[in-house]
Amino acid sequence: MPFAKRLDNVETSAIRELFKLLGKPGIISLAGGFPDSAMFDVTGLSQASQRALQEEPGGALQYGATEGFEPLRTQLAQFMAGKGIDVRPDGLVVTTGSQQALDLLGKTLIDPGDKVIVEGPTFLATIQCFRLYGADLVSAPVDEHGVMVDVLEQQIIEHKPKFIYLIPTFGNPSGATLSRERRIKVLELAARHQVLVVEDDPYGDLYFGEPPPPSLMALSQQVPASREWLVYCGSMSKVLSPGLRVGWMVAPPALLQKAVMCKQFSDAHTSTFAQATAAQYLKAGRMPATLDHVRTVYAERARAMGQALARELGDAVAFTQPRGGLFFWARLTGAGGKVKDAGEFAKRAIEQGVAFVPGAPFFAKDPDHSTFRLSFATADVQKIEEAIARLGRAV
Ligand code: PMP
Image (cartoon, rainbow, N blue to C red; front, side, top):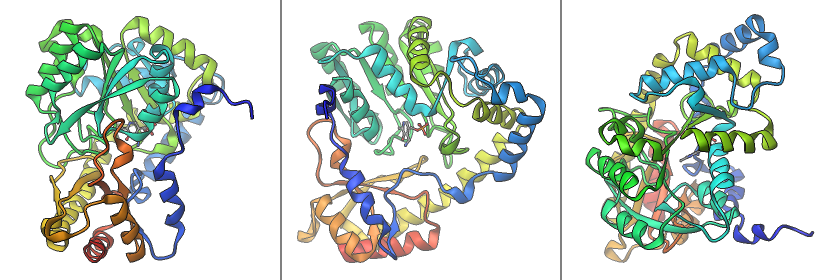
């Protein structure tokens, strides 16, 4: 096939290969990044979709504006206000999942060879998407408090990146949350070096105890010169439903305008039916109860996984107990001569009947082969305990 050269920049992911093994009977999967289907608010969504059809059939079933369905943009602006972000409905574009926002950023900002700074580790699909547009990715190290801002500043000076992509809250896969202090530093860096910072925030609402620090965009009130350098990507996927494919992006007006133009050529607009349903759902005020429910269930699973890991794997792994999101990020210590390579560990784990994802593919540069990601979202507490006991045998 006469494929475009840009396809040479990406490979099918190692994770995809692993997913092929998941069909094996009896396997407990801790591999996916999915929310639990059992937690979808089916009643609320079916009421919302019915109201969408009855009250606004023209809007819900007809072609719509590329920027998004007006009632949803209004609801989303209110939702953002609840998170301390001041944005008008016309300051955001509705996207087909936040994944499309990442693609639009790639399309509008990246020329082949451009440097883009991402966290190491970061979301695999972001790495692939930005590489497809020819980005030369620079990997900024992350510790339990998020991206290391001193290194980040050095990298900004050295590489003059087109933009910086961060998942500051309950990162995928790191689980890490950028501290408030570092958030302010990131905002100062954006303003001082006049560099765009993209904040991808699909997990910020999934906290288990104390809420995380406010988003970069909310905190930008403290560093006003940074606001014009900030982009925020939100998503309904992890809390409400990924199948709905409703996300959104807040960006400076000039960037928003170009992104809308590119979206027009791509999918014309996000499904109006999905948008009208999401708008009705938010308008009905069901979100707070849904959030309470998912937070409670995931918190219980995260607690069970942390306890089981400590009990079954002991000093063979090091991890930080996540305070939100869907993932544990762990490292094999090699203590007592035990397995140190997460790829090898994953193979042994499959033999024992449990799947997870090794960490290496999540690094754009210098992979750490001792790391791996476990999702606590889709298995219930009993399955999680069984899965970790199997991991104990595999290690
Ligand atoms: N960003 C991050 C960090 C994610 O983990 C995901 C989903 N796994 C996405 C974006 C894309 O989510 P969606 O397109 O469903 O909104």
